[in-house]
Image (cartoon, rainbow, N blue to C red; front, side, top):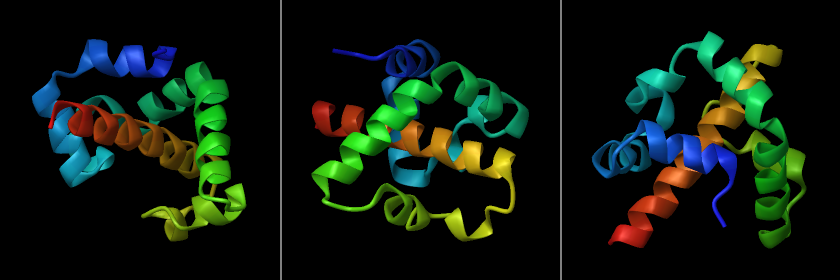
Length: 105
């Protein structure tokens, strides 16, 4: 079942754009989520789903969720709440883009 964040992604971006995100990373590829003001809005709206996905992914990798997040590209530069929320939105966006790319290949 598609969650609301995935539906938002599908509504905003075509498959070509999602493919670019999967290959280039969310901050570079997505003008809709590059601006920290927009990403914090998305985080507030979809944080429950983002955290559920994080927990599921950490459990499937048998990894502590904090350890998993600390391994994300860009995690080392997080110095505040806004940057942390951006990181998690980018994670969710890239994860959905990878899933879409793999489903279409």
